[in-house]
Length: 243
Image (cartoon, rainbow, N blue to C red; front, side, top):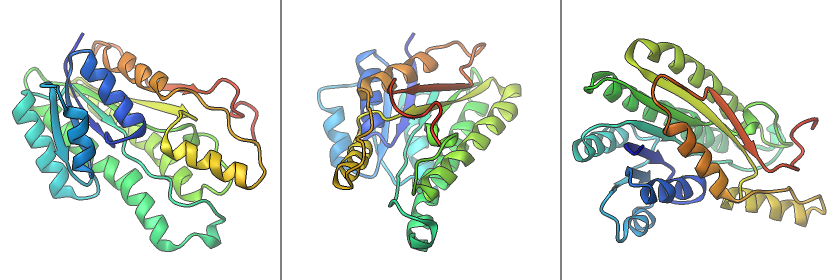
């Protein structure tokens, strides 16, 4: 199966790996992120890519990006709601309010804005329906130390996923969540570097390609089936039993 998918946070990490996989499978792919140059690099030599430079925290920019994608692709079958940021690690009384606001704006407000636009188009297009895949993280269940901003927003995404699943039923809009643990992305590499500097064990990781393949598996299902929650992680990372 191939279709149309819009991917946020597509300029690097999980978003970029996912975009490149879907492009290779013949999907029409909208790549959305702030860094236009990085998006243009992804689109090089491909005619099934729509470059959508936008800030997910800007309601007008998000609306225009979704409208442009639908005008170009004809419809939106899937949104991979992926854009996110960690902020800085630390105890809650050490975290600047500005950092909290930044993380909430990207990880929660931005995902709300993108899901809102996807839902709007999916409800009105013909044939009706589509799929929203939210990037949750295993931090939606079990936190790392010093991750109050990131973990709080990821717990909130689980509520967003459940509500969209319920509200989307009458319109054939499915919503699922992928919870990814320690894929080798710039964010995880930075966490590993901090661990080395502090003399702590370096986290076990997995190739980011496995996360992208899992998103493809979810996206390729017919709308009569849905992966509600999927956890994919480095096998030996301390998730089961950590605490």
